[in-house]
Image (cartoon, rainbow, N blue to C red; front, side, top):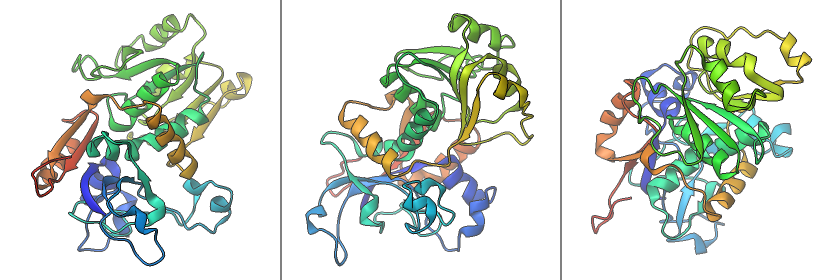
Length: 323
């Protein structure tokens, strides 16, 4: 792959590089970071379709074993031996990156490489979360951390599906932190009356799904009571150090569920790119680009919480064109 754009991931890049993630132990130095990326196919190996040469593609970083029980059931995200480009093998913070042909997907003409890389990184997980939460038309979803890379993708995709979206972020710190999320009601996640505000927005019913990638105890304590009957809480991350206390009684009395989503599988990836062909796009104001040479600056921004949405590193071609 000739790399044109590569995402900066909070956990898979920044936390791994700083040694604060279990994946750090899988890295052997010297190492090249860089998970999901986009660019053009430069060379193909033996047995790979030569028609791929020159094709504009996005690349998934997920490398399942393909043989375990989970993989045979089409649930590659649960593969015990799952590996990642950029963690277990050299990644895409580079001009070129070697990747399995099965991890490529052609991208529509006119879709910028930076957008394609960000979609590859966050889209399949967002789709898996919304599917697990049963989110579609006539449902209401609360997205916590909606100003983040994954949270903004979840909120945008839920709106694309026709759901009622409540996007929560720390608006008291910066009112424009969510940019322009079409079709979403914006709410300050720090407000002490969060539960009451959510009930008002949902006409007293509560939220059908909560996508919580933060795992913060104060937030949990304010929103759990307003999860609707048959509601689902979907998690794919936990930034909080303290364990969230879970009272089980409401879950069986109200037919609720907590569902963990590790990452997107091949089906989620195919579905996501189908959504893209049908017009789905990320929120432009929550996607920013920096040159590859500024990777260290990008990492510092993420560590300091100084960015919102997804940062993508870009490379130029010979003509000077960027991603």
